[in-house]
Length: 230
Ligand code: ADE
Image (cartoon, rainbow, N blue to C red):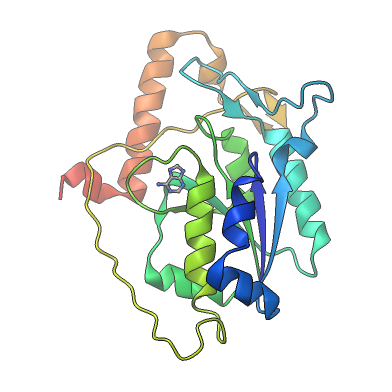
C-alpha cells in the first residue's frame, strides 16, 4: 500500500517513519510512504505563503485553495493510480476500526494534513476528500491524526504483524459542540467555484446568521447526536 502525506511540516514524519513496526513494513516492501511539502506548491515564490485571512472575518488564517488543489493533483500524477484523498480534520467522520479496515484494503491513500483554522471550503468542494477525525478534541494540526491513520491501517495489512493478534478499543468520550461553517479565502472564484455572496457583503449581521445556519445544518446532517445531547 502506498501512502502520500501532504503537510506543511514534513520533518514531523521523519522520526516516526523510521521506527519500529512501520520501518519494518517499509523494509519488507509492504508499505511505501512518500511525504510532500505543501509549501512547494505555494504561488508566492518569494515567501512561500500558503494561507490568507478568511472572507467575512473571523480569527486565524485559512489555507488557500490553489496550492492545495495543485499539490494534490500533482501528487496523484506521481503514482500508478490517483488514490483516495483523506483530509484529517476534527470536523470529519470519526475514525473507527471498521474505517481502518476499509482503508487498509486500498492500494493508495493520499493524506492531506490540516493546519491553522482550516482550509478554504473549495478544497473540499473540488477534491471531495474523505474527511476523517481521530476524535472529538483539537490537535495542533492534522499530522498526528495522519500518523494515527497510517499506523492503524498498516497494522491491518497482511504480513505486517506476523502472528500477533491485533487488538483495539474504540471507547470514546463525547463532547458537546457544534460543527464549523464552510470558510473561504481569496480568490473569490476558482474553477467556477465561487465564495457565497453573503460573505462578501460586509453585512455582519447577515454573515453571523449565515454562519450559524450553516453550522446547524452541518451538525444536523453529520452529528445530530451532538444536538440531541446524547
Ligand atoms: N486536526 C486537528 N484535530 C484533529 C482531530 N481530532 N482529528 C483529525 N485531524 C485533526
